[in-house]
Length: 183
Image (cartoon, rainbow, N blue to C red):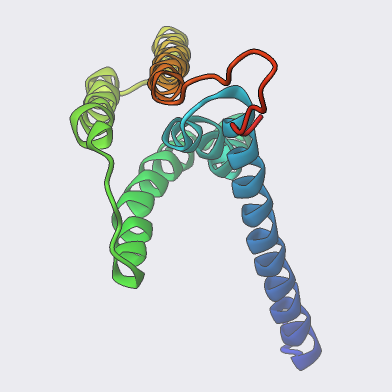
């Protein structure tokens, strides 16, 4: 029989608060590190958000889903994946927009939203037979790699074009003269 204890309840609450604080601190470090990574590799912040930050924030779902599958609870794994994506799109995005208006990059509307809808429909089609097997998983994982590579190449190409425009606007200094441009 379970005996209620205020000490146990307080301990659970304090553990929850500590976990929440660690989550906020970890998210802050992730965003700062990803921003620095984007600058150092010449990749746009949008692409870093779509790849590195997305992978990092999906790591808990990956851990839960992997554990569920290893314990034979495949429904929990599917519910976790689908539920977390619905929650992220509707709740997190909606709450963020309530706090402050979100500036949406045109690439997000033209390219990423259709890809997200396409990926969701692909999972639906693959699951129509009642299973997501090895071949389905390999296909989805392969498409993730292709998508990530495509984003990095596209971002680096755009970064080079912006740099070329910048260089064309700023004339180099005469030989032997002071160069006022930032290094």
